[in-house]
Length: 474
Image (cartoon, rainbow, N blue to C red; front, side, top):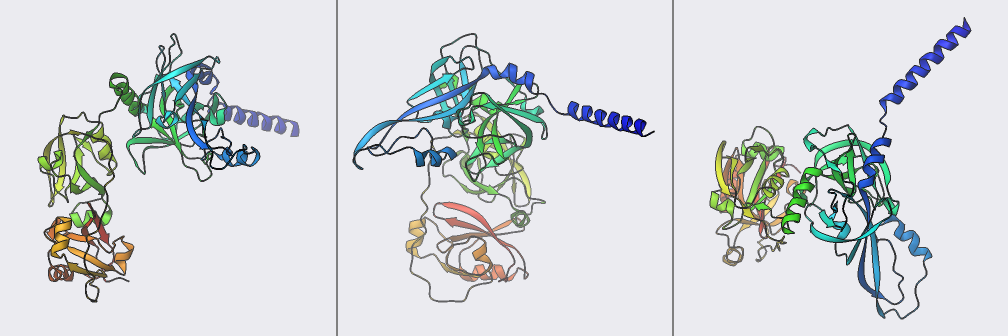
């Protein structure tokens, strides 16, 4: 009897083991076929240093930098003696056509004097950079070769969160390293990255993987491995890839003209929070609220105003403010588009002719100057404010508004600062321009204790909406 029970137990164990094994993916065939199209990319850049410094083969952000720095001796020579040396870096890429076009990251080849591509069969080619787009971190290279193995782009709309994906690249210079994981999220927005809806994965990505392909289980490329989230410089379980449809659109433009043209409408926007949605009369947080409209820009010509909430662009829903730059940027300059906005408690459609984005500019912020207001009690928001002087109006080119002299209580937690100018107060979808201290205080007196108050603030040359929570709170 015991023998039968033992045999039965072994049978169940083996059955479970086989079922579990069958449930796990087998990457061997994918790697064997698609690995042929993955390449190693090395770059050389001539930089100037000092005579007593030994050039390192690693970037300062590379985890290996500190280790090698301790053991590679300094070169003799005076501290101030300048010299040139070759800075080398490594990355990955993949072939997208048999005649030698290769995709990688723009940061892999940025400022490189020479780019070398090494194939899996050890052949090496000097590559020409056809073009690079820093906004999406995509670069297109060309090597003089033919009959090369190439990848097949995936239909990104079919990619699902939770499905298996595989990365092939050269982390730390180790060619054709394979790592696997799952898709953690789609459409991720990252700080300062407004034009890419990143694919987030838990695939092990390390320095050197940049520019390499991310495959689905059908052997199709779904993205370009681009960034990692890390506090140490190494893999921490969160990595990001540029969707292949974005990359292919960029490479089409780079191949045809060597540059990328993007649409723009000339607005400054911010996210719609729950408190701001309540103030504007929206049923829920959605869209992108317009802080400022560029003078003479496409949006101003179309009739957009500060306080408008953009809900749709060419029929596509704007769930969060990060959706708008991507949709506008991918629109051909000169196109006629329709924007659905929320204004004064109702929706309306506005037609706009999309302009062309110029080089990025950083606006200098300068607060209006003026003498300190006499000591006075803070208002219900914890603010001490004064009306703009003639000099302040002239310098800020504003006809009205209240300059913040001091910030206390709940307002300090809302990121209001001395020098900010209160332009308007927003309540129940209505926007009231602020002109005097008495007017402002009367408006505040109408709010119940504990209410949230939303203000339109001018800071230097920029405008933003700020919500102060818990009126009369400490």
